[in-house]
Amino acid sequence: MMREMSLGMRAGQGKMTMIICNDHGMQGALSVSPDLKKLINSQQTMKPYRIIEYEYLGDITHIFHVSIEYAKKYELPDEAILPLPDDYPEWVMSLVRVCEKCFEARLG
Ligand SMILES: [Zn+2]
Picture 1 (cartoon, rainbow, N blue to C red):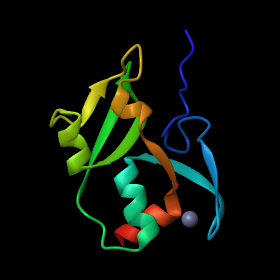
Picture 2 (picture 1 turned 180 degrees about the horizontal axis):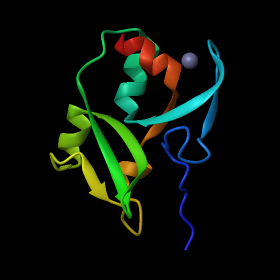
Picture 3 (picture 1 turned 90 degrees about the horizontal axis):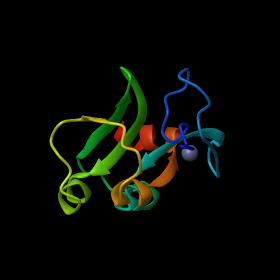
């Protein structure tokens, strides 16, 4: 079975997905909900977001940042760490990638 294990991984836990940012060049990519990406690009004040992680055999394999609205829309549970599923659900497939430096800048 093929899984894209690099999606949203922390650096150091394997190969991180890279992205080329107009401002920061080659950077690690974070998986976020599309509305969060819009907020980052629009320079608006960042809204609160939820971090949801996938865990497999005791390791965190994926880290996702989603807006509260997005979490509600897909009825994501409050628990932040979920077991890695066999197939990615729609809410994961709908995530988009952003430069981690841009994301951090918007949170600072
Ligand atoms: Zn950037």
